[in-house]
Image (tube, one colour):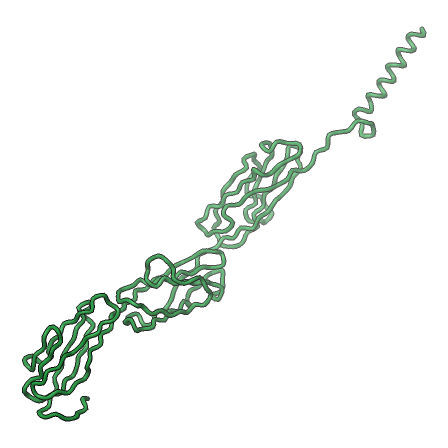
Length: 307
């Protein structure tokens, strides 16, 4: 073999040795290393009830080697370790829960190299509370203190003591008190009318329920003097005071027809016969509100107690 042939064979052998290091783990070349993806997702809303459609979005998941669009995801809705969906590159999904509870919602992300990562969020599935209250009394006037008690409100998840309540006294849609765990309250109305008194109850999951009752508030009527003692034919002017109504006028009438007289202004003239008679004043604003004034008419002046 010639000298030039030996040099060529030596060169080929050296190249073979050098190339063998390109693919081996012990050579000087570096193999590309795959790393696990980063899992992340949004949950909207974070709490709801059995009618809520929960939306998840894993678009925020990433990987150092793969584009986000090539990552595959799947979902475990209740955190029991069994994934309820198959792997897919679609990053969004929705779910509705059939049973109330607190669930650990889990996402699993897989890259093209088969490496995986997970992320979890807690989701609260609640049921709304039941609102109920007592109203005592349900009818009164502008001097009446109305008492409400929402202690019979309840919730399947929360103790009654944890429920918060607030009150809308006149049913205008604006609540007049702040939320509180104190279930009792009192209210006095300044103006006569029929009101829709509304209660709102909120549980710790933020779900609410309402209940309402009708409360009737009447004006008050006071007549001065009351009672009164007069002599035969003696005149007396009565004054009526109406509180809680913009209409303060009253009508006057005699209970015993023909026994004396009274004008629309409350000017009374006693009859010419002795006895006990009655004058009735009635609110124009609310004809169910009236005052009956006993009038003792005696033949001569003196002090007599009217029973």
